[in-house]
Structures are given as structure tokens and as C-alpha cells.
Image (tube, rainbow, N blue to C red; front, top):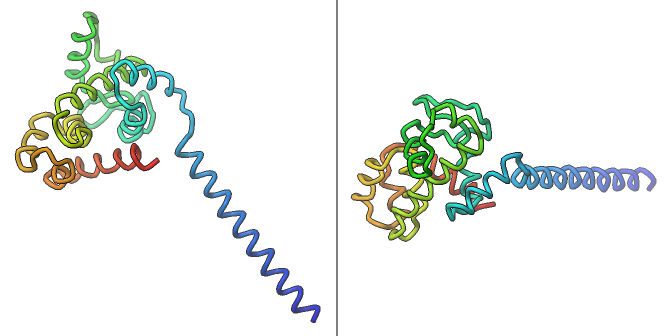
Length: 184
């Protein structure tokens, strides 16, 4: 009878240890998704300025650079939000910053503001669609001409639009950002 009690006790202890490990893992997962980053205040400022959900800006930064401000992409896009120099110049002109240089985009505040401005402009362009965010993200990632081509095949339906994207990397990019933005 004593060995049965020990076996039962060991099962209970083993079960409790497993539950504790699962609980700690869940807490760590939740904390990882809601970690405070050193750029959160900059994200909040730019998101407020350009009326974009800060969670969307955060999701774009995560997808583009994993929060690495010195990142340089394969097409020479730079910084946290992977801004192309031409997009940076468009933002600088709109913001009245005449002495803009590509190197300015390595500054987190400048990069986040320029990227958020660009994203806000794209969201506004697609505001007549049922969900402008996938359209704006496609424009952000693959350019306006590609987004217009996919729109011509899909119309204003965001789900259909994603299905019509012919670049698998852009489709995955949008789906990943939407997951991080909407499923938190």
C-alpha cells in the first residue's frame, strides 16, 4: 500500500511540475508579445501624429527589422521601418525638412516618423476599401503599382485582395503583420 501511495504522489508531483512548466511558458510567451521596447514612445508619438494604430507600426517594425535601427535591406532600404531613400525624401518634402540625407533614416525617430507617414498616406489612399490595411501594407512592401494591379483583380475586398497578390513574399509579409497586429 505504501508503494501505491508513492506512485500516486509521484504522478501528482510530476503533473504539477508539468503544469508549472506550461504556466511559466505561457507567461513568457505573453510577456514576449507585450514587451516594452525602447522605441515605444517614438512609435506612440508618430502613430498619434499620423493617426495610425501604434500596434500596426510596431508590427511593421517587427516584420521589417526586428527593431534593429541599423538594418539595411537587400534593396538599400534602411532603419527600423526599412525606408527607401525616395520614400524618405517624399516624407522630408512633406514635413518641410530640406536638408534630408539617406543617413537620417538610421535615426530611430526620423525613421519611425517617415515610415508611419508613408503608411498613413497609403492607408488613406485605400480608405474606400473594406479594410484598407492589407492594401496599404502591399503598397508599403511591393510599391503602389503592384498594389494597384492586385486591386484591379480583386476590387475593394481585403481578403480577395490578399488572394490576388502574385508575390508570395508580399502575401506572407501582409499575413504576418496582420497576425501580429490583430491577434495580440
